[in-house]
Image (tube, rainbow, N blue to C red; front, side):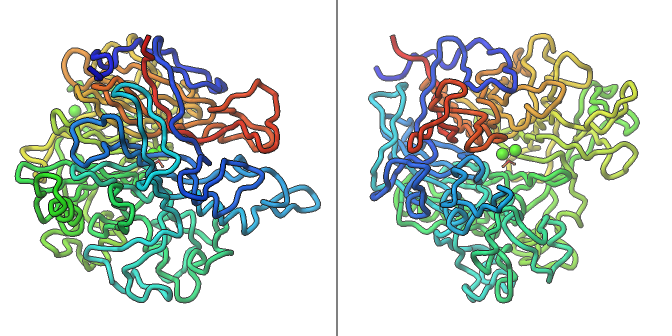
Length: 628
Ligand code: FEO
Ligand code: CA
Ligand code: CA
Ligand code: CA
């Protein structure tokens, strides 16, 4: 019959793993395999990965580094299940040169004292390791593991040299023009692609997140440069290679051409990916789209920075039904024009009851009402003193002016396919301090630095998850909200699991990426738990029902290897398959002294042979119950 085991994804929660456990730990009865790793060749001319003979040309033909967003789409747009052929789409967020490259003169300028800096050749490899990948995958039957296809006409690498189109109201504006692109409509490349979302019409959205780290501030707009975190130098050093990264004369606007939501059509490998200016420019974690009753595309987006905002975009046009060529072409224009909003959360409990400890107020809930405040509506700016183009390029400055609510690093924002409720992962924030009217505790972000027993706690180090309930349709500007989880060590006060008994949940810290299974359970992957001192454990993937008696019952499904963050995730409960991207395994190690040998383990202490690199490699992983 070919439908897995028909029993969904029943599992017993695993134990949290100490931070030095270099293993992917899955529940009893499950196993895991890599689908594709950094360095695996996917394009013609790509050779077997060899770290001693890496080149920019080879890296551009291989799967890149630090996989983040993940989906596997059916090979035909709109097909009801993944079947036996699929298109794996992955973001490739950033690079870790100290782990990727042997400490040789091929890759580094080595000073007499032994210190080294990346050379130009290595920086070019880094640019080819960033971006996105599309890779065909195949398997024998549904519910069985996939293999990636070494060569397929669908396979594609997008990197810093790939041409993009800018569209929407800010495209062509003076703020987006450079010496290389006087039209302000064509950009080379994408970077720091973090989370994303797959649209109902079968394209993939990808968030350009920490783009500021790749550019030297041009100086013409110091307020905006400071607000977006551009500095006078970068750790990547690409400003030595291309004037656009230095933002030198003629290229002062280059950084304006990054920080967007990108849309890629994986079904058309020749298509030019698009950067949608209508969706605003900030440190985009990702974007997830649902449809309103009338068929408008409604996208929810987080700006991953402490004290930044949650946004919503509503398309002007409506979706065309079906997956015909015409319908897909129309739907690919939906994110090019529409209204942009930012969220204001208002609590319903007296401020004095929000004491910064995470203890619930007297009404028993962190909750309240909210409003989507328009920034651009009906094609016009709603922000005093800013044009539409300025609102879209400097969206943070616009949102600052309208009374939006400063959140604790909004990461993924995901919509339940069952209820239409919206979930925001606020990953953590060590910067909230007591007694500050704008940056102290609020009901929507209720934890601050707190002196407990003479020691100052680290604010909201464990993060929380907000549940938003639209009042009416997804296009409504009003909502109610509550905190589903106040994460952390469940044995201590100031954590909350939707009222579920705290002695029966898995500890969870630093929620980052979110996904839903077909039954409407929320799955949360974490980033940063190892550095959370109270429950310092490897990052992992957790399931939490959001309805019924099990609401709030957090259970850990897997744990990733030492140093890694859990990305992806993708949960196909009908197929009995779970997929995660294991990002930056062994991030604190070096090539010569690795902290991780994931996924191609060697015995501890055994040095990999030259040309026989055994890890760590960021990897797309599938978890499943093997057939007997
Ligand atoms: Fe790239 Fe916000 O995590
Ligand atoms: Ca309340
Ligand atoms: Ca993330
Ligand atoms: Ca993160």
